[in-house]
Image (cartoon, rainbow, N blue to C red; front, side):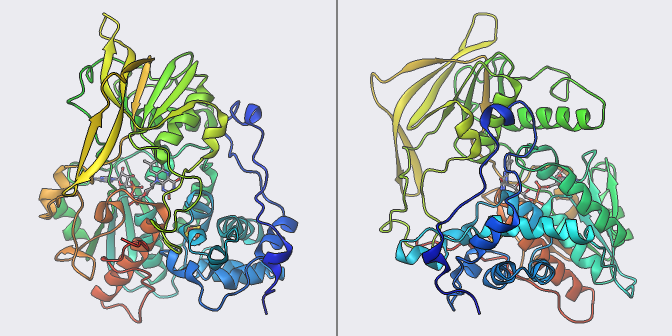
Length: 501
Ligand SMILES: Cc1cc2nc3c(=O)[nH]c(=O)nc-3n(C[C@H](O)[C@H](O)[C@H](O)COP(=O)(O)OP(=O)(O)OC[C@H]3O[C@@H](n4cnc5c(N)ncnc54)[C@H](O)[C@@H]3O)c2cc1C
Ligand code: SF4
């Protein structure tokens, strides 16, 4: 029986982050382990409210009150089993999820701080590794059916694990040189050290999943070959088409790049150093891209922008500005706009923001300014207002508000326009919709025997949604292949986050 008064006895507490001067001198994760005492105390704050809205906040339907109580009572093995029953990769979500479950925690109804659900999750996930090293759970019987998974991000990997455990033969095709999708070279090590991916891959391999890296489906292997070799195909190619701003004067200057170019180059340097093969940070064509000693301007306000900020400081930037088109959000939930238990529009301070840099809200870049040699030397910005008219965004610059910010390196982190246009799409006979995503039927099929999941289906989203869609698509594929019984399907293709509007 959970403690109904725990939240009255204990305040919400998170472990202290590593000190800024220490952590920006390396690439290790920002958070140290919380320790058993703190985590059991925080799990005690969950009162098992009876109607746990956190379940609906979490796309995976994680059984949060169950494992909170198991942690409270020190029942770690059962907590591990309970968490793994709904989430293939809690070590990823526990570190990286923005935790919509916490926004939906019933404690928020009475003005209390939510339970630190995400922190409890990561501690259980790490306990699983410490206790039995992620013991493989291979299928006892093979179905003789074979599935190709294209793309090795969290959606593809979750589907691969579910299908392999159900007895199907699964091959994951990845065009990059390493498995993991955005978790591998998109998200920096200070948010997710890559050892966590490698440990999980060892488990998948032991469960029979085959990995083929450096293979671009549609180019190195055709859709026809894949269809001939496998009984079903899952497309989980992400939504990696970066939004650009070609109309802004000076966009073609040297030093103006997509944010992902910077992140991938930086993360490859860290990976190579870990392998004892140091390389400089460069674009694929060998052009150096590094923030060391530079004035950096990051355009955008989301995860990608915050990751660029953390990378810039670790590389030794001279100064960083982060520009946001929208006004500064409120610090607290505006209940009239975003009532509990929906995801609120509030100012999100990532650990990268306490490491330095200046955030500038309600501004838009008018020009990337040339230094006379074809290299950017500044961005000219104006204060703006943004309105929605008939669903369209209208940005209006305030006259006389223009000014320059010095810039040697400008990073565009202004979002993604869906999955990339690439040969694979036409070969499989699928087309991008108006949002650049691939539609599916209610059974996740985009076309006969070809399924789609993750960001490629939903548009750029979150890891928790990618895992949820990967699990649900795997369940649909299992049924399509005539598998025995049902696999869990936490979401259907039309499911949306909790929202008031
Ligand atoms: C910089 C950044 C930071 C982020 N931070 C967070 C965060 O902190 N928390 C969070 O929840 N979410 C975060 N996200 C979002 C999250 O990473 C994605 O929602 C998630 O990775 C989507 O998973 P996916 O499996 O659908 O696709 P992806 O992870 O994008 O993987 C798709 C894979 O498909 C491969 N591929 C594409 N085409 C082919 C082909 N033809 N043949 C073979 N392989 C192919 C790609 O190389 C890639 O590896 C972040 C995103 C970015 C860009
Ligand atoms: S995966 Fe995300 S939403 Fe689900 S319980 Fe974990 S932190 Fe909450």
